[in-house]
Image (cartoon, rainbow, N blue to C red):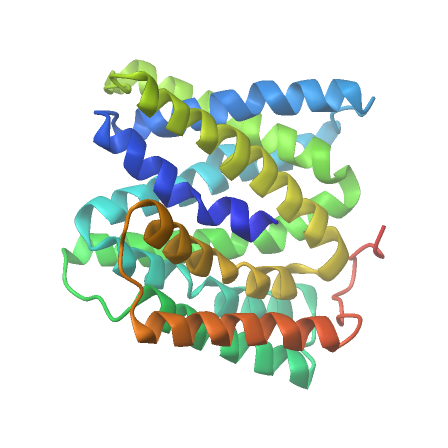
Length: 284
């Protein structure tokens, strides 16, 4: 569910950009909408904000980690082809596997290694062999992957202690606050028509509230490595939506990549309960 919701993000973003909006404005609108919804959800569920150091850690994760990752990725897409930026971002499952092993002492099963390899190969084929662009864009694409990997590994530990909804709410609020400050400082352009604002609303509701909330809920149950491997479904969803809604052509290599990603998901699903690192909570 999270991968599908995140996969729609580039489609909404392209619509907002076509309507005259700047990246910072789109990101502020995205997180502002999501923050309102998440606060309401927190109240309805009767849950509370975490306190003390846990709250501070979640604020830092959203205000520094998630803002840094999203801003670096959105900037990279302006400097290199979007497919190359996506390819660079989807190196993050391998980075997560390394970080989880080093930091958390997590161990991959043979099925986990097989799924990770299949998913990475599938992501490469799905995004396509794009090249070119400015070196800064390539560097920012890799930075976004590293930041996202760190975000997932750290988030897996914090979410187990704070819960999925409180964690997502704090992170989204922190990101909205940072982008609100950037909006006041840079005065970016916002969408010109209702179509652009509908796209921003879609970014906030589907590609943020649903995407992040579902990701944290899944992260509690399968751990960071499997969660990041399953996230490689995102480019498959993006390519499918682009073909359906934007009339973009799907190449045979992309179809092969999608098949590999789906095979990776099947391998994970049939491999049984994942091996978890120390400190992780049991599935709810």
